[in-house]
Length: 239
Ligand SMILES: N[C@@H](CCC(=O)N[C@@H](CS)C(=O)NCC(=O)O)C(=O)O
Image: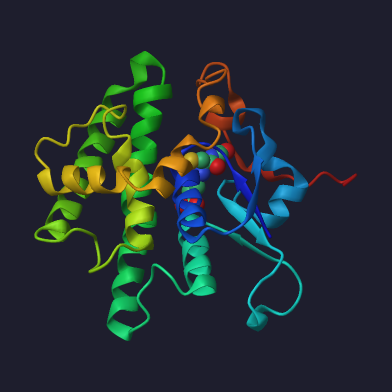
């Protein structure tokens, strides 16, 4: 059994897609990010960076020993699950190296740039949006161009459908709400459509969909999500 710490956001979808693709049995724990659930001491033990997704596997592979194993960071989680199930990640040396390249590309490039673009499009105060939107909008498109070249003549990022597609899809899925167009990226648009048809992807996106836009937080009303500082991580001496 896997405890899956989740919120219905692009980073959460990545892992939900893999859990669904593998048919693994999991219990979902919905975190209310705008209310600060991610800073609860118990959650920080699982996810020290105070972000979803994260999981605890109560039946890890024998190499991990018999105690439950916790994993945070979407790339690490997807690799962990791919190794646990022996699915959706190449095992030959070259294929594995390529998978690592695209996983690291996503968590170090596409993800953070898209996340910042989302902040400036959706949450920054109106007078403070323009520089951020230009900078991160440009970076978002730059990463679309990288993906476009990789997908040229191919159905998926690697030779077969893999965790690299699962990790890159969510931030492309929401291109429109990020005010970006895929018109200049036909390979990416076709890949997005291909993935969107998969039942596992549909199930992952629908998970807690109703919770998605409830009480939408913004910079003015939410210091937990948008004005974080080191003080959020101070240990409670009574805990
Ligand atoms: N690099 C992380 C990013 C995770 C992330 O940014 N998660 C967001 C939700 S999409 C979160 O938990 N935000 C809560 C917060 O910033 O307090 C990963 O890929 O897992």
